[in-house]
Length: 226
Image (cartoon, rainbow, N blue to C red; front, top):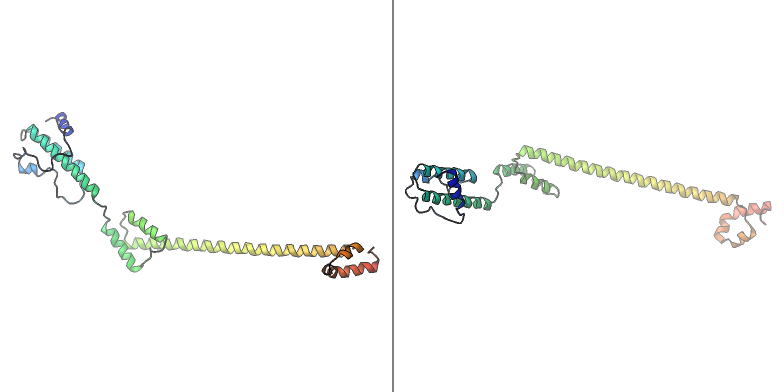
């Protein structure tokens, strides 16, 4: 069976075909049969490499005359069907985390229980576990120290910001008091230098007259009020 013919056989094969070893291959030596797509091998398969190797073995068997063309086609169907099933099984298997990763976290939690429980830290924990990196206890301790340093720095920045805002507020209040005092002094000076008329004095309330009484009396003595 040349390469062109083998490709034709592969193209005519169906993934939905034979579930068990097909009839017509009983005469193939057991040593050859055992090499085709092992079913009970544990772990992950390199399905493509296995299938390519088995298809090449089938071609060699046909070329050497150990099996005929029909038997070769049966075996091609069988190999492709098993490859399809293996891929499906691999896709269905859940991704398992390395036990070493879990061991590192367990050892760390013995020394610092609930370190990653608070909000924010739990996000870091999820990221570390999903990274599939095998962190040991010492590496996790260094990471925890970095987290604490970042948190303390954030607290320090916040406290400094609060203190700065308080200082600005205090300075603003002092400035406002000075402005009010200057405004009051300016009004007092204006009233002190102001010459009242009889009409203005007559319209004053009791409080206004009391506030300006000294200036009014001085102006009366000087004959300034007309």
